Image (cartoon, rainbow, N blue to C red; front, side, top):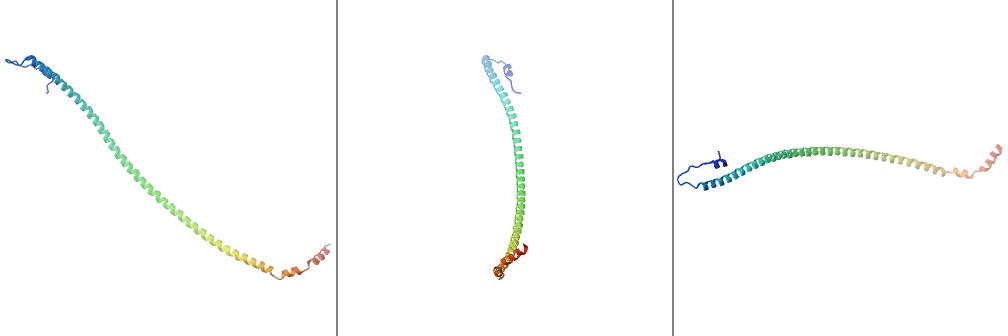
Length: 168
């Protein structure tokens, strides 16, 4: 067990013939007691400081552990979100490709239908043109006949007078 300042203070030395000067020894012991008390006080303060620092260290160690766990969880979550986003983007791309294919197919089908309609209209236009041409040619032929000359030469005025007389 270590000495205390009180142990040093109460220490009695045996006296011998022509021993040390008692006042000088007592003065020296008083100085040792003071110094020893200071050392003990400093030791106690340092021990308290060490305990406080150990508590803080424990607290910060807990914080560090918690932060490390949080970082790991955040990384896992980020990886999961990244993976989900990648899957979702692939699904969106596939859906867009399907829609694009569907739109292209619909456009091609519509283009083919329009092309067929155009061909049908061309055929109908050719038939119409042929019929119109035949009709116009028939009309021109009718105009070009000699029957018109007979009509111009005929005297309808006298026939009209006779008809008018009969009605009256």
